[in-house]
Image (cartoon, rainbow, N blue to C red):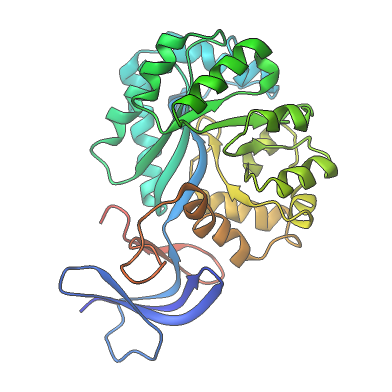
Length: 339
């Protein structure tokens, strides 16, 4: 019988134990000393959930071209370099880039990722087809092709996406944005925003759109963060992406204000969408803010609760797919994602 032993990450922290498999090949948790022959030993972590990606731009990483470090010039819709390349590149190349990013996530133990997908129905459909042969599950927060309200396109988009993921409210005409939000609410489609990334945006305006969650909030004030925490709206932080643009998320204030934080890797054109690399980055640059345990929970149990994922072992909250890490180095010893 297979047996994996070590410190198992539960919702309230690590606990020594081991995992075996029953006759149906389903993992079973144990919290006593094992007499089984141990196959792997280390930190046993639920498979990761990457709470914010843009894997449609993964193909750009292979192009090895200089990328502007200005947000508007690189990723701002509709004319940022990223959007120009998405429009001018053939679909097969974009799809190959998606396959690369999904495979990178599988290899590093990610079982679910939430993608803000550009290019309307065509873009979301392409991601659906790209993810079909693999075991890493996408949650697609699609985006209309234009910042102008198009009810027909949105209704078609709602049929294939899990939510709507929009750029900054600053990119939109308020009347058009209100129509998008209203239609999404009528159809029970959650909506999320990039928020206060390169400049502060009014928190009351943001919250008036009833966001499912917000991404970045690098320019948020202490009061903004307190308000978001009081409204129990999660914030997804992507420190490596922020660092590329010479931005720093106010992680200490976010923690002090008790904001529910999740981790994402953001643009796949900048780096690998490996959430473990994001965790290592935070530990290196902000060593006195979060413990390893806190960061791991932000990338495992936290997003599962927000997204209401049902992937636990029967009778336990521990997910049925997991990762074994080497203590200290955090190198992956084994992962059951895709096995």
